[in-house]
Length: 495
Figure (cartoon, rainbow, N blue to C red):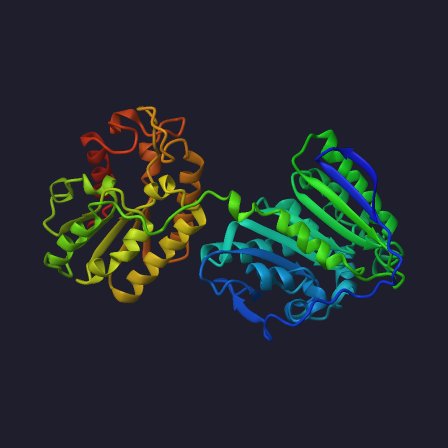
């Protein structure tokens, strides 16, 4: 029976107290989805673990799970909590890291686990900020390598892991929802911190100081009614304070507290995991509500243009301009005064089209390839994460099939709806800037890739395409092409 005790706002804050008569036990979910945890390292050598996922066929929803070490967390059905079902049923990718002073992060001549936290706190070492930094680095890596759907990032944790999950959700904008199972909300409630004066602890350790940052998040918490280890009373007060802050600030977040009977004390009450799974599923828009898109659509001119390209001679001296109509309408050989420049633009093309015809581009092992693609993907409602995923696939194909080719990625140009058209190409400045940010991050991590940031030179103060460079708000006029060619010449990219 579900008994709402107090609701401060119709939508913003929900605090739920539930009573059951049956005895509570650990919630265990059926058979394992996989018998092994996959270990990876970021470019800087930071180790993390993966479990579940969709086979890397596309960027997946990501659930960070925090409890202890990588293997103890992802290798244990109890600590994986709702991650087991979300991975098996929905293809979510579960991710974990060693917590501070756990496993490989135990520092020399230092205590491990919570005793390590307490000792670090007395030395005023900010292990919380350090953990947030490590998690951000892993998330950046997963997004950059297309494991993660940047719009579907979630975090959960158990006990001390729940504390760090709430801390990370507070500071990471890409995390929209957080679930905590019997979490620590006040370090001073732990016996390991007994005797440490509160004034010694860094302000960042106090979750109450993060409430304002959590008001924009969706938060779900469960705890047993007799949890003396982390203190049921302190957690309940934290939830009430967060609920009040959400209402007072008219914020977009919510807090749902499930207080369940649990005679064992500090453990996850029976039924909590399934409740968390259902809650997480609600945080993602149902597929029926998603805007539909089709990767197979090609412009009418596509096949004839590709047939023409394949019939033309290829050379290792070629400088290929690869893209859509914005590239197609440029007289590149004349603008750049080079007979080696080859125009491989197709009006209306998208990133999937470029992938389909990439064999022709790499056939002659060209010296350079300049890429500008993606604006038509917006018109086809293709998600940003898929566009960036395709960019990485294009890069991977060129590097593998034409390893000596120098690759240049050009950022998308702004648009300007001067003809009052309804195409999704227009009025999507935020998406263009998001994609451009991702393109630039690709270049930061690969010395073989050169980023040419065209966007600033073509944008007016409001972020629109400068009218002097366009005739319809998307395509360039001769002044626009001259400006583009000038940027390439000044950067000496053709040398």
